[in-house]
Image 1 (cartoon, one colour):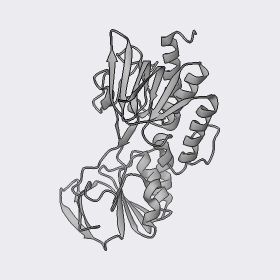
Image 2 (cartoon, helix red, strand yellow; image 1 turned 90 degrees about the horizontal axis):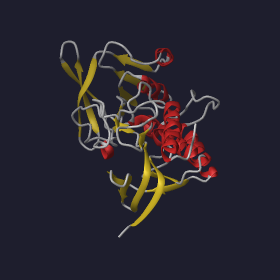
Image 3 (cartoon, one colour; image 1 turned 180 degrees about the vertical axis):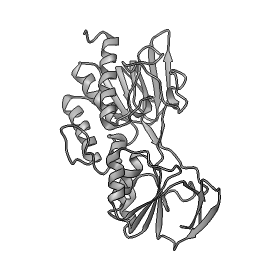
Image 4 (cartoon, rainbow, N blue to C red; image 1 turned 135 degrees about the horizontal axis):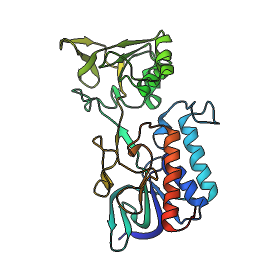
Length: 315
């Protein structure tokens, strides 16, 4: 048997959105519990440097995430580490129930801020060599490719940022872009073009990665002609970083919300969903810009909306 605890608000997810919600909820005097299954801070902790968060210059993602958590803790926010396996809503009781490995949690309102996970590129051998030549986190694994060849799949903002970061370690960095242009902000594109260690292969895809314990060959496809060619390498001499976006982790509440075609959760401006008392915030939500500052804003709005819903705040 596991213990059951009851709260006014449960915040599921300890990234920028969830921690900001915890700060606002605590300041509003709400009995709130923030649940996270891994490290607090979320996706931002895998970013080497954050230089676009107002008022805080030259901070690492991990440091910024720690600042968020420390701020919430200093205010008296409550946290729990648990892997939640199901979320349900009792319409008659107007109550949410979350079941985890360590216990069951009930609440009148829920801020769902579960974030997103890296999207796979889909080439043959991607799963086989994950962690042995294939990575999804440049700041996590970049140092392991010091002096080696690095390929980055993707042409967006994150791919450009990772290319510049990885150029500090790798002997050379090649961006594999399926379209004929980079889909990034002008500052990111400029950094890529000015970096002598970075080259870009446009209209190209990776279709296959082969080898034994470690990969030794990459099959590239020309996206115009469809022709493929294979390039071979010494074992352990190269790595592939996948940077093609993220998958919203909306599965736990998919029956309680409206989903966009990409699986993200549709909310209104108050972060509300179709289920009364259920608010969503951060990268799991449908939005035009997924950045730490927009996640924090979502969290602030969601917690405030929860307080209004509970009658703890009057505007």
